[in-house]
Length: 209
Ligand SMILES: [Zn+2]
Figure 1 (cartoon, rainbow, N blue to C red):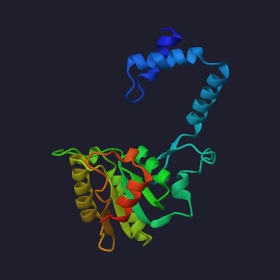
Figure 2 (cartoon, protein in one colour):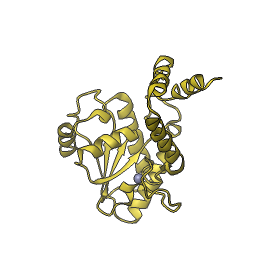
Figure 3 (cartoon, protein in one colour):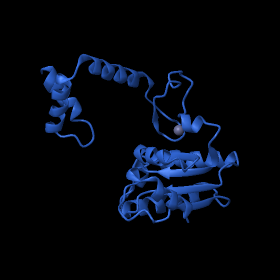
């Protein structure tokens, strides 16, 4: 296989990229100056060594401190400036990035890595429920956690996931002293959190219930 076909195949593994678009990327690279290609290769090389997944929130991170082997948490989870009494549950990294961009939330996060569809037999295989319960358990032991905010999509999948998590954490960990809230439904139905703007998010956070 020649390098054009090889690279096309690799680009086709990106989310949402078909053969035509993948081929367009390859032609773009062929036309680009070598300086750009060197930057790209360097960034990929760095990602290979520094891309790590945070052991607390499960976000991928690759900041300049991450190279040290003993760094197992992302900059948000490591920060002293964050409010450790609030934990926000999101579906995916892009949602967390969008919320961080608003600058309106200063607590911690947990990324579920998926959602539970209605009538699923083994929901525990679709989201990080075991990791979430042990995280909550540990935060309660440190008597830090006061509130859990569900920031999941306003869809059937989002609702089923919220119900499943609520039921599971009530069974597994005593959460009597913790408030469970949801972002207000001002986020119009079907709107994806990853595209949320600051005003909409601020109002949904303020009116959480
Ligand atoms: Zn983290």
